Image (cartoon, rainbow, N blue to C red; front, side, top):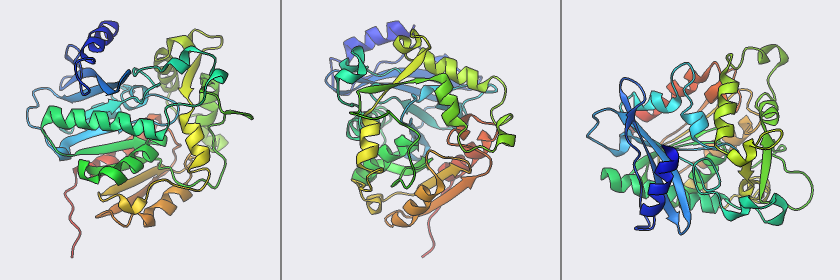
Length: 352
């Protein structure tokens, strides 16, 4: 079904710079329906988009529309829409009456794999950096706005996605209702856990599932590791994630290939101490939320960023106990879901 979808969408994408293709709608629970699209970002680049919403939903609004974007290494659908214990975070938000979307930046998941990924990584420079990612985001924002007849959307981002969405919102606050930054990125004072080794940065990196799990558990106390991830959850995620990259999955051992544009940007911007956007230019309500044991985006990042958000009508910083950078798929994930939902749902106007 998905292969057929991509073929059809490839034809439609040539018709318009803002084109999409709906898959046959199917219910994902008793109350939700799903559609899939390929949205043209620029010539030759088609962005994978998934939508979930309540069955029969006919009224759409900015405050009830959410677009999610992934982090540096893994695509959106295998975390945001992975049904653990029968429900994904995407399901959870849609079940609150929201029209919810996820997207994959070029080079990730179901989006176009640029030609550099067909060659050995060392033969090309990094690609799919933050500027390119913003083009992909804007194509999807405009697609959703046009599709639903709305002027704004809520943006929800994880990890590197928070850098993408900060920069994007600083330039496009008029298109954004609220901004949720889960594991927010800011200027780094400690080493990144996303490494590529010495020498020139290659076009992409290859990550094994063993490496992924070791990074996941970095910073977790030894006596807390055994039950942090419920039984079978890591395996479900690993299987779904590997399936998004058949070329990498066919290697021994299987790997996921991820573009290195983010690594180059990390060294230049948040690793180099020079942020190319102004936090003060973000003019919408902002939630910063992270977990206690997050070593990818430690607490000092959110705590430094928070006072710089002087243009936000209101802002909030929440730290969740006993979780990592990947609390989205851990036993305490509902704490993340509920706090974000509270922020999305609230109708708050600061007193004057």
